[in-house]
Structure formats: C-alpha cells, structure tokens
Amino acid sequence: MTTTHTPRIFSGIQPSGGLTLGNYLGALKRFVSLQETGIETIYCVVDLHAITVWQEPETLRHQTREAAAAFMAAGVDPARSILFNQSQVSAHAEMAWLFNTVARVGWMYRMTQFKDKAGKNSENASLGLLAYPALMAADILTYHATAVPVGDDQKQHLELTRDIAAKFNHDYGSDFFPITEPLIEGVATRVMSLRDGSKKMSKSDPSDASRINLTDDADAIAQKIRKARTDAEPLPGNMDGLKDRPEARNLVNIYAALSDETPDQVLARFEGQGFGAFKPALAEVAVAALSPITTRMNQFMADPAEIDRILGDGANRADAIATPILDATKSIMGLISSRR
Image (cartoon, rainbow, N blue to C red; front, side, top):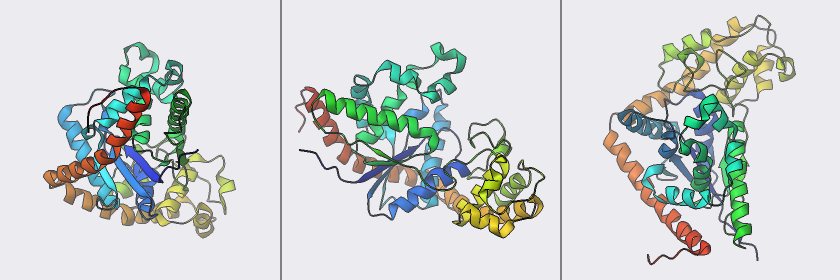
C-alpha cells in the first residue's frame, strides 16, 4: 500500500548577507504566489546553514531578522504561511544526524557547491559545510514536504534529498518519506550579476554594483541599472536574438519578471531600441516594484522584538508538524523514545 502524503511546500533562505533582487525574483516573489495555491507553505530562515562558515554573532542575528523582514515585506503572511528560523526547531538538527547515517560520503563530495565554497582548501572546511546537504534534506523531509521551489543551482541538493528519502524508504522497507518534487519556473528564477551575465547575482560578490539589494533606495537602484554591463547592439524582437548576449538577456529577464510579462513581450515593445532607452524603463519598473518592499522592511526592522515574536510563533507551529514526523522516523529506525 502506498502512503499518500498531504501536499506541503517548504523552502528557505540563508541569512548570510543582505538579500538581493535575485532572492526576490528567484524565491520571495514565488513564495508569495505559492501562498495563494491553498497548499500549506512553510518558509524558513536557515540560520544553521549559515554557520557552516563562521559568522559574527550579532551580524547573524541582525541578518536573520532582516531576512524575516524581507519575507514579510515581499508579501509572505505569517498568519497564512509558517515563517520561522531553523535553529528554533531542534527536529532539523536531529533529523540531519539520522540522515547522516543514511547518506553516503561520496554523495557529499559530489556536491558542486561544496567544491565551490571549499575550493582548494577543502581539508580545512568545516564538517558542516560538507554535510549540510543532509541538513537540507532534513529541512524538507522533517515536514514531509512534497514540493520545494528551487533555482537551477539548488537542483543537485534536491536530487540528493530525493536520494536520501528513497534510500531510507528502501533500507527500512517503508514509503514513509515522500520523494519531493522541485518547482522550477519563471523567467528569472536565476538572476545574473549586473557586471557579468555569466555569473549568478550574489550577496557575497565583492562588488556591490553587481547586485541590487532589497535595502537599496530608489537612487541606488537606478544608478546600478544605469551602470549595468550591456553591449552596443539594439534589442531584437525575440529572445532567440539574445542567445549570445548574456548581459542583455539578463536585463530583459529581470524586466519581464518584475512586470509579470514574458521576455518576448518585453522585446516586442523595445525592438530596435538600444539600452539608452531600455535601462531607464527598467529602472522605473524596478523602483516601482522594490521601493515598497524596502519601505516595509525598514518598518519591520524598527521593531526587532515583534520579528522575534513572529519567528517564535512560527517555530512553535513548525515544531508541531516536525516532532511527530521525527518521532516516527526514530521508531522506524529502532530508536526507543518514552516521550509522549
């Protein structure tokens, strides 16, 4: 008999630096739309993932609250979705250890993000950095999440989550964990750097000009778009004409995602025009979309105690789902618990 799992969506964002336009278009904007589907949505500030590399404690606390403020400012409603920070629900760490016994070391070494972050100095990387895909699997499967909105760069980790779920089910002769499906959609699920169209927009890029921060004011947004790297060619009438023009393609994708249009619709309007005309139009759209979010973020950040209250309430609601699933996992594995 096959277990039917209740549809549930889980996703999270690291508080390891200020959030960017890429986080908004690739994650937050989609989180809000998924909230409208009627499927239960659980959103997490994954602070345990952040400490796989050293974080200054006060900075981490500030960035955790700022990430929560960004969720809410973008439209995530903590009354309709569960919003919390990961470290407040101990089931994440407990389940991660259980999954460390299921996952294989070779799986971890194949993770491209570990290779990228550890670089040539992998022997000195933290064990947490190597093992954190098991924690990501725990984040998802502790809630029996059936779907996760992910960008292309996270597909490999979700595939590992599916592998862990499948191996657990096989090893213990059960179908306890769902095989979580990825939700990959949208024209700008991967927003690229404003300085290099071949690289993802990143909050860790040394150049602030490479990204639009959700804390940027209107003048900063307009200036960064004005200085964004482009080329001298006019815009074509469809996306096929941008195949070998990564910076141009990135700006068109950003415009389309912010205006809820397709890239081809945007190009149909700007066909034949250069970036001297396109960039001011993009700046106007970006400021209109992002300035209200920045304003609301500042309002939330003015009351950190209220943010902490909201995260605490979300953690209690998350724990009510996670603890029974964790206890059932332990029972399946033969671990004894007298907790009632």
